[in-house]
Length: 135
Length: 194
Image (cartoon, rainbow over all chains, first blue to last red; front, side, top):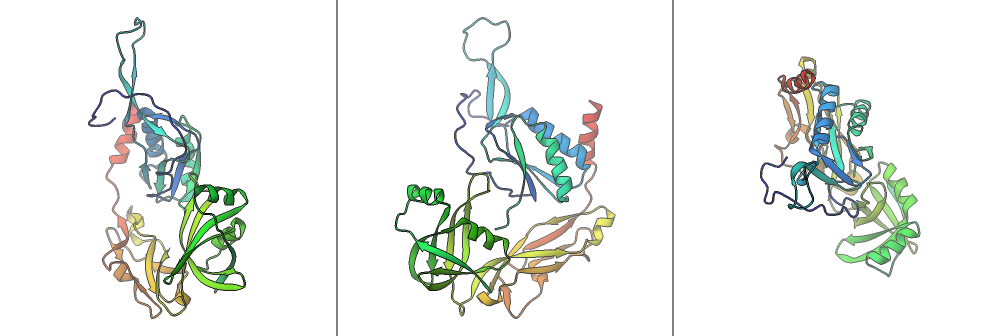
C-alpha cells in the first residue's frame, strides 16, 4: 500500500485503451505481460512475489513493475443504505493490456518461463511470457 | 554488407494516413540525415521483418532506381511489442563516422559463481563510433576470470583500430554480486511458517 496519500478515497474510473508506457521489458531479461485490463490488488502482487521467491530460492532477480496506488472502499456487511462512501478496504494497481507486471533476470529462459507461469496463476488477468526486445 | 529494402514515397502524412498504410500491409517510416530534406516513406512489413532477423546493420533503401544507404535509428512497436508501427531511418555515407549501439557478447562463467556469486550484467550494449563498413556485429567480452565483487568496465574492453567505444570509460559492464544473506530465505521461511 502507498506510504502517503493525498486523498484517502478514490473513484473507480475506467480502464480505457492499451498500455503505451510500462509495456516493455526494461530491467530483467524476461517478463510477464498482461493481455487484459483489470485491477490487481496488493495481495495478488505479493502472492506473485512470494511464489517467485519460493521457486527461485535466492537465484535471479525479480522486478515488480506495478504498484497499487488506487484505494478501493467498501461498506461493511449488514449496513443500511446511505451514510456515505465506505472506508478503504484494499489497494489496487490499474493494469492496461500490454503492461509488464513482473520481470526476471539472471536465470535461464526455461526457469524464467516456469517462474512466470507460477506468477500468472496468482494474477486476476490473462498474462503472457515476453522476452526483452533487442533493438 | 547492406540489406536491400524497397521503399515508396508517401504523400499523405499524419496518424490517419499512417493507419491506412498499416491496413494495406505496409509500414510507414521516415528517412532523414546527411543534411538533406526528410522523406516520408512506406515499405513492406515482411521485408523489414526479414531485415530484422539478419545481423547486418546497413540497409540499401531502393526507390525509383536509386539507392541510399541508411541505418535504422528508431523502431516503434505497438502496445504488445509485436507489430512494427513506424521506423526512422538515418542516411549514412560510407566515408563519415557514425555512432551505433553494438551488442556485447559475454563469454564464459565467472569464477565467483562457484562461491555463490551471481552475475549482474549492467550494460548489454555499448555505443561504438566507426565507419559504416566497420560496424562490428558484436563485441566479445570474456568474463570467466571475474571473482566475487569484481567488475568489468568499459575501459577493460580493449581497443580496436576499426572502432572506438563512445561510452564513458568508467561505465560498469558486469559485476559478480556476492551471495545474498538469508534475506530471501527468511521471507520464504516466514511464509511457510504461516
